[in-house]
Length: 439
Image (tube, rainbow, N blue to C red; front, side, top):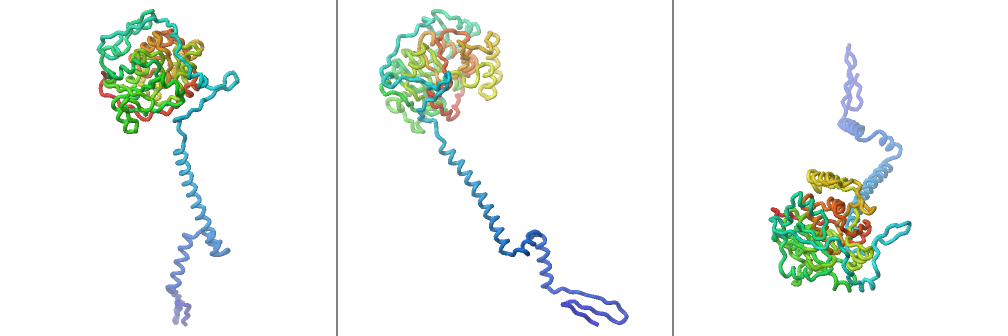
């Protein structure tokens, strides 16, 4: 007997068992292969859903999933684009004239209270403030620009007398060279706003907020070296034949005495009385800031009204010079060794950690300094400059020590918000290029 089913065959013969041989057709083999592949790549839940609901529903679900994936990608791109736009349109501090406020005795007040413009226009320079130092004489003849003080000379310079003799820059007569034309101009200045940039580190920001009538009384002077001049002219700040860039009179300095540009910058900052020998008042502002108030109004508000001869901002974060030293090291603004040497000297000379002056913390922030050029303030600045030359260039470390050693100032330490009212702080643009050798 022979039985056939499809391609299969069944045979039996006499006295033999039945043997079944099944041979699938090519179509059946292909169907089995497809079923096996679907079992791997087509989950059971979807197969059942397919069987129960049909192909259209599966297609709809896949379409919705694709839409969700596309929506997530678009949302991510949108967030990235949003962040990019916020970064581009972030407002700059440049040219802001707002006057911040603070609470005083439960009453909100302006941080800097200036006279009305018509009163500022009428301001005249007052008589000189009485000074405990009557005459200041400068030591010359040393082979180093700032003079090399011995330890005994340093301590002797803190003994206040009617006539003081001390180092105060230009000891050898060489370094920080200024041509004759600029020197003659500087002798004619009586009120000056000073800034400087050496090594091309910062831009020059035009002052704002001044009263036009005071421009005849006040000069804005910026000290540059050749590197800064080149970079500023590339940026569009071209020095004219009159040596002006906007309201700033540029004074070009050659033969800078120090490899450390921070020390070169202390010369205009601290020795303005030597650069402007006939000046009565000066305002120093760091190159990272834009001065935004009328200078005569500032003198009246910070010096004349409170009967002070020196005004500087309190430090915003700390009140202890020793903690400030730790912060300076942590921010890599000076080495641990040089900071330790300076602060160890201050400890050995008795400066307390909680030193305060007239009830106020003595730690200052010196990006803005407003002062009258009296013998006492000039003496203070010379001694402070020497301390910076002797130790680190971080002048906030030496300032409270100088207040501790020299009680010669009629001091106005104004709050941080007043400093913010005086300037728009824009931060340093770049790192100043150092020189090769000290002079």
